[in-house]
Length: 428
Image (cartoon, rainbow, N blue to C red):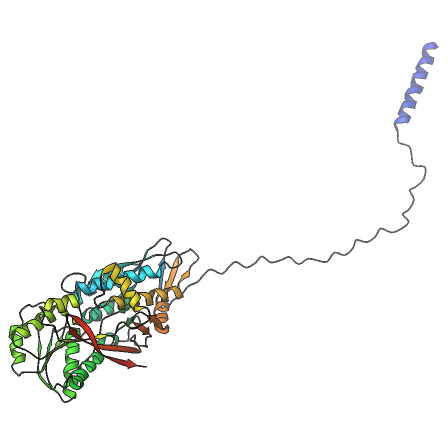
């Protein structure tokens, strides 16, 4: 009985413990909310923003093509001229003028310039070889020269084919700018104007009526000589002889005997200084006491006056006017200190280089890869369109590549140097 009672008590305790573990039933339902929940406030819709368009790539175009110079490239101004032989004094004069221009100009947006000379010998075939070399060099931006018309005419075909800007400071043959090349410019008067000044001086200033003509059979020498011949005859003068010699010869006694047979009052020489010095010397030795006259090709003190053995005294030469422009005297002093006195084409070569460099500065751009880019036609167009105040004067080109205004000076050799005696202006 006791055991049964104990079992009942244990069952009752267990039952109570189980009941205590159950959750109590809610006594009543939860109260309903007094208000309906507030509706969510309207948030204005935000239109998704479009990503910005990518930057347009830098596109540089040019009808003639582009010159591209990577950072660190030294950009070349090429100089085509006679750098060896009898006419090297002129070529070195040109190269020195270009080097001084490069030094005075400085860099272009971090790119440096250098010169590179090419010896064209003042002849056609070597000038073509030089032109082909420069045309194949991607670092060549432009060419100064050639010096001689006989070099310019064939070489300019190469430069035109490759759309390379060229500025000659000295080539005077009429044909140079008569072929319509838009890449070609020159800084001197042509031979028709040079001949007109020569004939005017011989006829009007000196009062001469007879003239013998010699030339070296080159495009330059024969061209200017024939122009003098034609204009002298047209003025009523008598051309007693016209003869050609071979450039590089040393003995001209035979041809001198021919031209002196008719006793001319003057002899005109169409050619360069090396032969000119020999001819004027041999004319004097043959007893000629008349006037000796030559073109710009003889205007060199060391290679004409000094080389003539004194026979050049009293002779005349025409030359494109140099000097008189603002800054020329200071430039000449600086040039002389660096290189020696300018001979003939240093000032023109300096201006040619400066014209090119300043035009390049106006049209150069940096592309997306950080290269310096210059359009070939843009460069030529800028040169043609932009007047330039140079040390040789105010320079502005016509559509043909000639200067719109030029001057020619007549020089006489006095006391062993060239002295200006007359200056003639052409153009507006």
